[in-house]
Image (cartoon, rainbow, N blue to C red; front, side, top):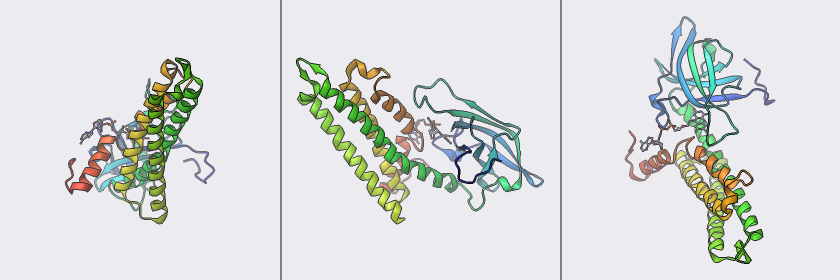
Length: 269
Ligand SMILES: Cc1cc2nc3c(=O)[nH]c(=O)nc-3n(C[C@H](O)[C@H](O)[C@H](O)COP(=O)(O)OP(=O)(O)OC[C@H]3O[C@@H](n4cnc5c(N)ncnc54)[C@H](O)[C@@H]3O)c2cc1C
């Protein structure tokens, strides 16, 4: 395996989702069984970011003792990663199908100390927290592009920014961006204090992705026809945010997490 000494030279990937197990990772069928002192992995993963260029994959698999994580060097015989294309979202990044066919690993490849889905979920909570900020960054760029454009674009003899309907759009966008950043800041402070709870991360992920998509789409309207070209970022952000609202738990999954928290009744189990 490539050395992992903090220099950022080896790309890794995170393999949880499967063709038939997305929102419900507990339904995964990838299986690791013992063969003497080794582990043998068989199964499929889907949508795995950077897998075709990664040196190492963390693969989550069922075992006789529950779900475990395995460190898999991607050059191991039986490991294949194939990019998924064409895509209409996140076109600049790679997501792959992975096939695991009798991938033989030493006993030391299994991640110690964590059994079950709390292993992958602890990674997802970190990524979900990052998305809370990232979605608002995309929204802010879309807003700034629309604001700038509206000041320079004249129709009916005046800048678009001078019309009340445009100002309403800009103000609504600015309100949600400021609320979204304040929410992210609040959650970040709780994270620093060690008091951030998973359902609070769901609040941020759900709200900020949902609002960011609305903002990017609204910003696009201010750009009119020019907004559907690659010369301007809002529609690109909106399309990329379709992925962001899907990975790390869809809108629906976070809604169900919060519904369960509010009512005490889990609707998805
Ligand atoms: C760009 C991109 C990058 C990704 N990167 C990775 C990665 O690096 N590693 C990784 O492991 N995975 C990755 N994923 C996978 C991602 O986590 C899954 O796509 C996501 O969990 C949803 O799973 P699914 O696509 O199978 O959809 P499904 O689970 O089939 O869901 C389809 C629809 O049904 C809804 N749904 C599901 N269950 C319920 C329910 N109980 N009630 C109501 N509605 C429901 C969902 O919300 C969704 O709207 C990535 C995905 C994308 C698009």
